[in-house]
Image (cartoon, rainbow, N blue to C red; front, side, top):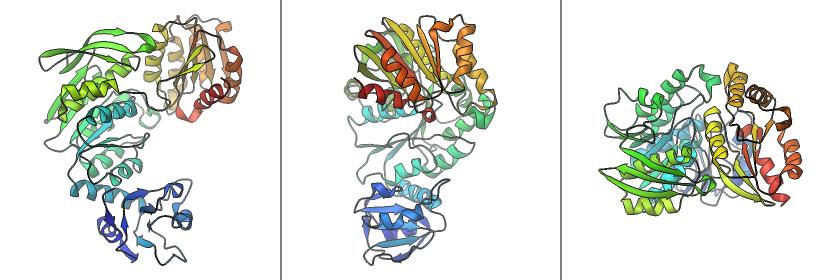
Length: 456
C-alpha cells in the first residue's frame, strides 16, 4: 500500500486514533497469519469468524490494527484506530487511495475467465508499465478493496477483478473505485441461484459500465449477446474483441493445437499480426483477445504485447497440465459452470489421447434448476470422450444426461467425493490417457490433483 500513518488511515476511514497515530504502515492484511512488521491489521467480522479475536495474535508482529471493538492490554508501541465498521473502513480506505493516487485502474467482470483474463492483462501491461494485480480471485466486497488498499506507491496500473453473488455488489465496488477501463469476459448462467434468470445476471453485470469514469473505456466480448446488449446505452468509448463476430480486435485463421495451445492472426487497427498462445482452447483465446484489447487501450505497444503473450501462463488450478505416469492431467479444478465446462470439454474432444477421461464434479450456485443444468451438460458431452466420472450428488444428473446422449453404463462412474474419485483414478489412469478435472471450487477436486501428484 502507499506509505500511510495510522492517523492518515483514521482520517481516510472516518475513524479515530486511540494510540500511536504517527506509526507508518505499508500493507493492509485481514488474516493475522499474514501480518508483517509494517502491516496494519483490519479486524473484519465475517460470517464465521470475527477478526477481533485475532487482534492480540496480529499485534505480536503488526504495527497496528483497525478495530470496531477496542482490545485489552494493547502493547504501548502498537497503534490502534477505532472505526464503526471495519469492512466499511476497508472500503473507504480503498476509495481514498483511489482518489489520492494517480494510477490507471482496470476492472474485470464476467461469468467465467475473470482470473485468467486478469493474469493475462497484468502480464501484457506489465511489459511496459509498473503493474499491480489482485491476488487469487479476490473480487468481492472485501477482496477487491483489499487489493486497492495494498497498491504500491509507484504503481502505474492496477488490475482487479469485480465479482458478485447479488445485485448491487459490483455497483458498490465500482462506485468506490471508478475504474478507468472496464472489461467484460462473458455473461452466462453462473450464480443463477441468486438471480433467477440470465437477464437479471446481465443487468447486475451492467453495474460496472455504469460506474467507469466518464472518460473511461469498456472492453466488450462481441461474441456474447448478453454483454453486447447491456452495453447498448453506454455513451463512452467501446472497444470490442471476438472470434466469431466482427470486432475491433478479432482473431482469424485460428489453429487449435490441443494442449499445445493456439495459433491465430489478430486483425486490428488496419493490420494483421500473427501470434501463438501457449494456453489451449478457444476460451483462453477469447481471454487473451480481451487482454490484448485492454493493453492497447492502456497504451501498450504491439512489441510489448508480443513479449507479454510469450510469457502467459495458466493460473493456479485453471488449465494446468500435470504429467502422471505417462498420462496427462488437465487440472481445471478451480471453478466450473455450464459455460466453462462446455469450453473444457471441447478442448478434451480436440486433444489427441489414447483415452479421454472427463472427471466432472458438481457445479454450484445454479439455483432451483441446478439438476436440469447438470443433465443438459451431460447430454452435451462430446462422444469422443471415452469415460465420464461424476463427483457429487448433482453429478448424478449429469451422468443421467450422458446416458440420454448414448453413453453406456460401462463408460460412466460416480463417486460421492473427491477422495473416493482420486483413489479410483490412481489405478484407473493408463499411459496415454488425457484426464480433464473440472468442478466448482466447493467440491474440492483439486484434492484429486494433489493425490495424483503424490502418487507419481
